[in-house]
Length: 282
Image (cartoon, rainbow, N blue to C red; front, side, top):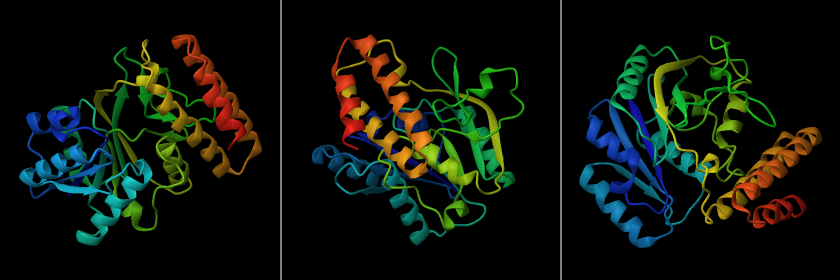
């Protein structure tokens, strides 16, 4: 069984690029799959419409009628599956953003690998529109090493991947949940930090999924300031969880460089202020 989880935020299900691609390109409602929607919308009208849409589409709908963040949303989905379906060694969950351009090729290759039941982690290659491969990568502190963009593509030390399209064997969550002290960012980083302490197997699919990364686009909307504030707080929480002052120092430098880069792009000094406020009021 493959459980597909799409996390929405103030967006109608039918407006989700991920859902549009999934529902139009391939059939996912079968005895071998189940779609779950976790709605982080704090717009009650949108949430009500999404609940009605899920009911008509035979999709499991979950919400707390507020934005609970990514890690808690994941945990609530896992709790629902464990309670109503149980975790089996041949079952997997796929985490999906609401704006990912998934493809039939990806699903076919994913389904094939899941049927073999050989791997704990199955992930496609995630790239930006300019062709830069961001995931999987090799975990770092200041910056993850984009390993697949180098000549050493056959081996990835410190295996790391982003949540988008990440497929995980459900039994990994028998005794593990995502750290809810992280609201949105570093959730996948912390997951793989913990997972690398154990033995696990992984498979990198040949399929490449193109993802738009808003913070790397040439034009940054003013609304991104709120998103950057969350990122700053999560990076500092992640540093605190490491219990290492050296890592904290390096991540503060990272935040400064991120804020400086956004300031150069937008000429908006608020990015610097948000960064300083996060560092000195953490």
